[in-house]
Amino acid sequence: MNKKIIVIAESIDKNDSSCSKCNVALIENLKQAGFDIMVYHYTRKNIKLNNIDCQPIKEIKWSLNYVLSRAVRVTQRNFNIDLHPFFDKIFGFSFTFFNDVNSMKLTISKARKLNPDLILTVSKGLSFRPHYAMLSFPELHSKWIANIHDPYPFHLNPRPFNWVENGYKKKENFFKEVSEKAGFSSFPSVLLKEWMGSYFSNFLKTGVVIPHQNSNYKIQNLDLPDYFDTTKFNLLHAGNLLAQRSPKGLLDGFELFLARNPEAKNEAKLLLLGPAQDHLEILKNYQNNNPNFYIYTGYVDFDVVYNLQTNVSANIILESKSEISPFLPGKFPHCVEANKMILSLAPFYSETKRLLGNDYEYWSEVDDVEKIAALIEMLYQLWKQNPENLLLNRKDLQDYLSVTYLKKVIHDLN
Image 1 (cartoon, rainbow, N blue to C red):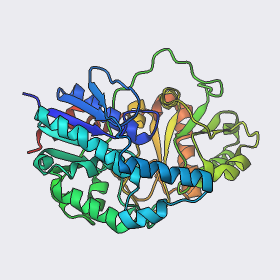
Image 2 (cartoon, helix red, strand yellow):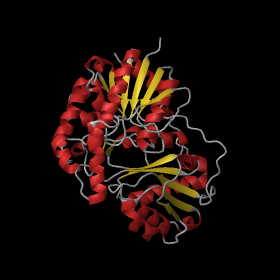
Image 3 (cartoon, rainbow, N blue to C red):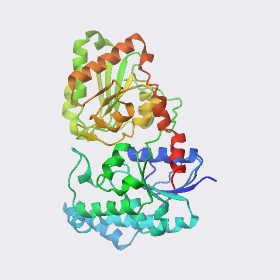
């Protein structure tokens, strides 16, 4: 008999964050694996997933936390006084956080009557509200899978993402409690499990690796955008360029490649799609009516992005300059599924590099302009010979990201 799994999700809106996209893919694959799935979500929208029972969690209103949270917002909006730092130092979290947690507790209290085999908590960003709520139900801890999608709290992130928040000690104590009370913990990457286990050792005992899922996403009858020419050698980076993810090495490397291969100026194009608020000046200087660059820093619908990923010559995964990157990028499964070569720009110690393997050629540090130019030239020459030379063809990665692997991980929990 298949296990009954209740999922407590902060959001199942695929358009609000990369975390939510990953959560939905995980939920859908759990269903496809044959598990009996029930989802309670705090999305604040009436969202349905195919053949999955999804129930919205209602927000508690007119509680003391609710009233105080609104008072803080009104104070900030009308008087430009931000009280969040003051209260975070005292309580560790906002009144909104506590009200959301209490809303989730009411739902969990009802859901436990369904007698699930497992309860999976998934969050987004650095919130982990469902995890905080589950701490109040010790009778369910042996069934609890706490999904940890990113390092937490902020000061435990690897550089350059680490910074000390107000109330950091209370946040650290909260996660220590999660590590000790959750019967199981899941991580999207081996390096993240090891990273978090170095701070909270119990994660090394309870942790399993459930990578971001390949959800066999299908696009039907969607035209490619006007700025995309299928006859060209196209390199694509799609996704948010955070302040810590500078594209300068990539842009310089592409320019150097063009300078060394003048014939490529009529055939090669670098596309950067997605928000890049902290790099607008750099990007403007590079684009500057240069037909070899297409840069768009607004929102691009996921359907369009995925369609491009499957039609470009190679996809780029750009990470931050750091000693280590334990994150598995949310777009990694999409790039594997697209079956096009991946240009990985990441630290030597990174989950992307670990999965691609030590023998994978198309990896460079993010600021190694010479190597980036050389790798692009290698890809270009292969494309010139035959575009099919740039097919990724990694069945091992497809299997690792598959429903079959996920099913085995869940069945092995005991």
